Length: 350
Ligand code: MRU
Image 1 (cartoon, protein in one colour):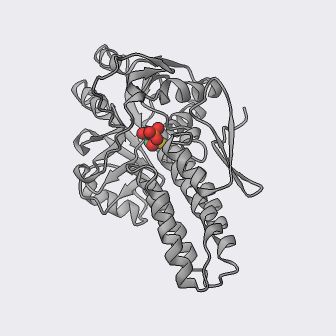
Image 2: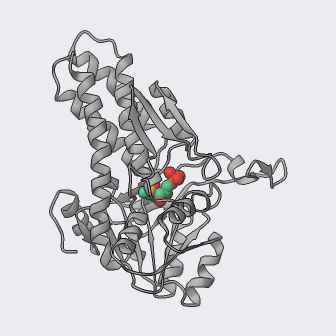
Image 3: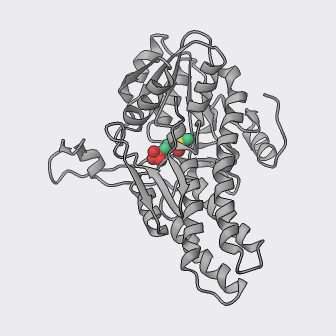
């Protein structure tokens, strides 16, 4: 099976697989201006924390074409402004700000104005390549958590489409399957944007991993009946105390898992850990358009005039998280100690 590629750089353009069209159509988008990339991120044509980090890195490289500067200092000042614009495309996933900062650091380290754009493009490509490698490493560490027999529940889409390739939580599931463990997958539909129904189902079918799509609200019944061995999800931002921001509905799943004695795992690269934020209370939560809730597949499903709240993420307090799988190992409580050690580079015991 050919690997799914959500993001490609070719002939000076960013090529994205339009995730709003999947699974019905595989429509590529070719973008040649950074503002188009910002729009594609905001409209969730590319989505998933690591994938939007990679797209944002390319957007910074593309935005450098618009910079007109006489000096390195002037160049950096303009690039920082463009970087802020790019980083504001979506607020919750810290991977965007992380990627933009890494690009700005790369520009700072290249004093020759004639070379700086080439350096920026190389850095974006490096971020993309590293992400695939990081996901494979996460998969290796996470394998031990996957059951042999039973079923794994996952939420939203954390696969190749949400990353530069292979996936985070879905990467761990995939690694478990590829090492010969046999289990079933329950993947939630993930209202209202249906990343689970549309994207995770699509990836699981292509991977040949047996899976069953469920509506979000049936997870409790399945867990209580003993049909779920563990749950694993991704993350958009992890605070220093281990609180996790992830797709709306994650918190409810974690609480039900705890109630039923089911391990609840998170898989995320260390670029998703934001040590500057002490707890989940400080993580900004994106609120999206009412139409995502009042319409289903284009058809109106709620009356005009109804008030809508559409928070796209929630916070799962660290007490509910059995372990966090990163590319540097599996970390557990006390997260206030294990997370900084892991982010700063120390390998931990898996
Ligand atoms: O709104 P989305 O689709 O960008 O949200 C995606 C998620 O919540 C994922 O779980 C998270 O980004 C991790 S993706 C590897």
